[in-house]
Image (cartoon, rainbow, N blue to C red; front, side, top):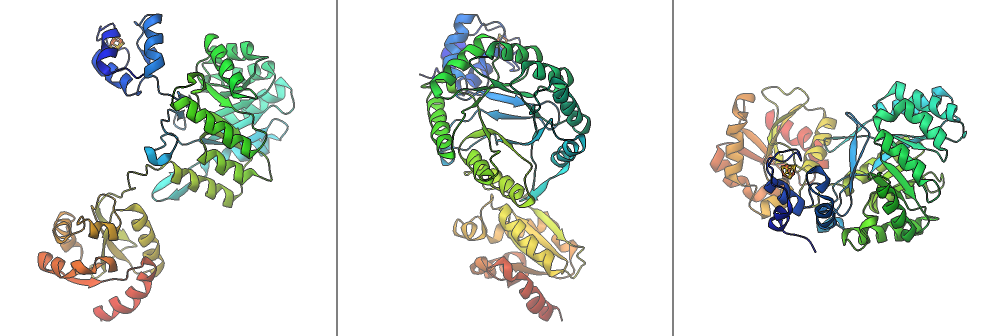
Length: 447
Ligand code: SF4
C-alpha cells in the first residue's frame, strides 16, 4: 500500500541538507509519495528505511537515462496501462543498428543520418535517438573499431550488443564515459556483465525467456550493484511480444511483481515485419527499439506514430497566440483569424503557403481547442478577438480593417464586428478551400 507524505516524512532523517536535490525533507517526502523521486537520493537513510520506502514510493517502472549530453534521454517511469487513463511520459528511443562487419564508411553514413536527420511535424522536430552497434564479428578489436567510428562522428546514445564480455570491455574503453546501454546479461553471464555496467555506470539490458526468470535475473543484477536495467523479453513472435509486454506493464504498475518494474527492449530487425514490429513496440510499451536504418517512408511513419502515442491526450497541443506571417505580407495583406490548436494552425498554414498569397494569421488563445469546440464552449468569442487584435497590434500591421474568420465561427460574425469595429468576412469551413477563397473572394473585395 502506498504511504502518505506525512508517514514518509516521519521515516526521513530530517537534516534538511538538500543533498537529495530537494530544498527540504518535507518536499522530498511529498515527491516520494507521488513517485516522483527516488529514495536512494537521500544518503542518510539506513537500509531498513530504504527498503520500506523503496517498495512503496518508487515509480512502478524505474526511470533509466540513456547516454550523456545533449541527445541523452530517459525512458521508463510510466504509470498506466492505457494512454487515456493519464498519459505516457517517456517516448521510446529508436536506435539504428550497424554491425562491426560493415565498412567504416557505411557505419559513418548511418551515424550521420541519425545525427542530422530531423522531420518537423506540428511544430516539433522529430529525430531518431542513437546507434546500436552489434559485435557480429565476435572480435573485440573489430567491435572497438566500429564503436570508435561511431563515436568520432557523433555524440549519440549507444547500445553495445555482444555476447562477449571481452568485446564489450574493449568497446567500453572507447565509449564507457558516454554510458552506453549494454546488451545483454543472461543467467549465465550476469556477474561479468554487472561488473562492466557498474565499472562504467552504464545501464544494462537483461534477457530471459520467461517473466519468472527475468524477475529473478533483475533481482540478482540489482544485488550485484547494477540497478539501471532494461528488459529484453526475447519474444518469438509479435504475438509473444504483445502478451509479454502487456503482462510486464500490468505486473509492474500494480506492483504485483516489482522486480519487473523496468523499461522494455525490442529488437525490430526482422526485415519482413520491421515496420509492424516498430509500431508494435511504440504502442505496446517498448522503451528501447532497435531497427536497421529505415526507408524515408518508414522513418516518417515511425516518428509520427511515436509522437501521436506520446502526446498527452488530456492536453491539446497548443501554439502561442500571436500574429504570424505567411510569406512577407504587406499592409494590404489579408488577416485570417483562427484558434491556437496546433493541428488547425499547421493545416491552415500549409494551405496558405501553397496559395502564395502573403498574409497574416491571427492566432487567439482558445486553450488549444479546435474552432468548432471553441465556439461551442464559448472560448472563441468577440471579447477574445477584440483583445487579441489590440494585444498583437494588428491595426498597425495592415492598412485595412477586414478580418477573415473560420467558416465554423460564422455565428460570431456580427458580434465580432460590433466589438472590434472590423468588417468580418466569413471564410470557408474547410482549410483546404482557403486558396480558392483568397484567390476569388479576397481579390474581388480588394479590387
Ligand atoms: Fe532530508 Fe535526506 Fe534530502 Fe537531506 S538528503 S534534505 S536528509 S531527505
